[in-house]
Image (tube, rainbow, N blue to C red; front, side):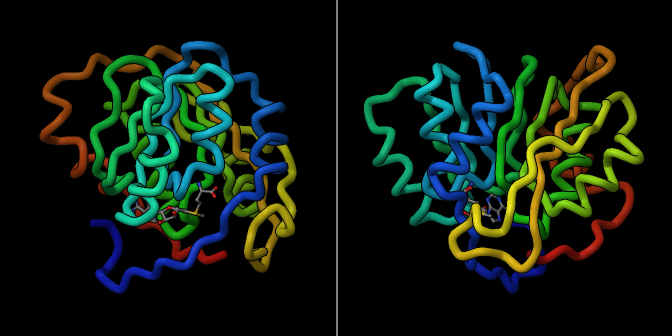
Length: 200
Ligand SMILES: C[S@@+](CC[C@H](N)C(=O)[O-])C[C@H]1O[C@@H](n2cnc3c(N)ncnc32)[C@H](O)[C@@H]1O
């Protein structure tokens, strides 16, 4: 489990219209392998699947994972994993991420996704606007970073204090060969700079 044990389960769900609007802007293709990390009850997972993506949804909250599993019952292109997005093994083959993750672990998530062992091709992450600006000014090594769609506080229920934006990360060079990924991944993702505390 990530964090210090004092987990707070409050959340800011994306409103359906905003989830659709974000997806309209990022061209997810039929058959793309897409991870929705911190999927909640599926604000992004469900429209991603409806657009033909193969989705792996990762959610730590047991009730939300159960609810999403129920919502996608019978859809074989969606897999729901109840687990920690900083520890669940990443796919070995190239993948995309489309997610509205918890802001408290967004920086750690970016480090993990752009780390040596990751086969991430592209990520579209809803993050605080200031954070998207910061990555755009200094992209992670091997990636470009740009600020995509503006996502106002009103796009969420309940609305957070500050506006958000879609951070778009695109790989600029081929991923490194991955060996023995499973055992080491959680540790690797946690090394490096300490995440600045972030709250919505
Ligand atoms: C901001 S909410 C977004 C939910 C959904 N994606 C949406 O847009 O409505 C973040 C979600 O991440 C989940 N979460 C928090 N910490 C997590 C972790 N370490 N691993 C996986 N999910 C986590 C929360 O339970 C919550 O459902």
